[in-house]
Length: 430
Ligand SMILES: Nc1ncnc2c1ncn2[C@@H]1O[C@H](COP(=O)(O)OP(=O)(O)O)[C@@H](O)[C@H]1O
Ligand code: SF4
Ligand SMILES: [Mg+2]
Image (cartoon, rainbow, N blue to C red; front, side, top):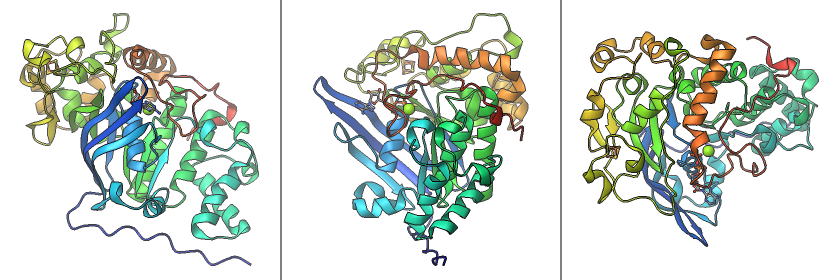
């Protein structure tokens, strides 16, 4: 006989006017024999219900550690949260007893990892793994939980879900495994979903399908979505806001259309300039020179100064520039942001004046070469991915890079396209 479904864990009460998630001055360090790596140095942002915030930056900039600190799954030791607040519906997760936090984790704040193969258990059928969420958290019996698993697999558009519910993770392609991860993440109707590079290991066609699925699920459930990525092209179509990270700090935060149209930080500007554009076929791409800093020895002044073509003596001393208001609902951490904002755009980019009058015209994003992967077509999109990887992930080397998934130590931890071979079940063409 089917058991009665256990009531979902009650959502924490929402303090009046409080955002869904409010991260303030978050600090994380890794204490190692070689010294202390200051991985997160005062990160602050908010997330509202139904909003997508993209967190963008090179490998090693602190994106995953930020997510792990929010989820309470930091690798401790050596990682420690040393300061800041993470308010979920007004209550500080960092001050909650672990038992209370565990109730929130998964059921109210869930996470999708990059490396689905490592994050799924290889010895259990996928349906069993999804069903376990309903058995453990909702107290459902085996049959009913398995039925719910089939429904979820159908919801994330896995073809022939009922027949495949007993298949093992290795019997699915990369894209289908990522759909299973998404099914597990949304099983308990979370209010906040954190997707850590959910499409990096997939080929571009599948990337677009997975992004569309995340967008559909978000529309349907009005979740707050944090989308972590190193690929500016991926976020343009999906996110409303972008927070750009460098060496454990936010260096720019703005609405997508404003950030693409008129970057106010040299690093953002460098990232945009490194995206291949349809109108520049055959031309050499502009990449950001140099390497991100070793987090054991972050340079004095602005951490970006050794790589910055706008740098002045002021940038090499004292405290890093604060993330300050530079316009309506946008912030930048650069002493010389007005000069950067006013600088002539790279060929093909909209001028600042154009972008200001462009409003939220989606054509601006196209002009900026941020067309979605499917619009570029497989070849163009692969070129774009390869190039943005060399500008971003491919330049890492001075910093150690942590695995993206909880058990991904042997998996594809470095950001970068590793097409999964495009199994037949990827091209379901939805
Ligand atoms: N488990 C760990 N042990 C030691 N240092 C770590 C660990 N995880 C992350 N770090 C440090 O934090 C930095 C940021 O890592 P991460 O957030 O994973 O970067 P990314 O932006 O690529 O997701 C790394 O460059 C590394 O210095
Ligand atoms: S503060 Fe100076 S070094 Fe840093 S990004 Fe701005 S101009 Fe460049
Ligand atoms: Mg990461």
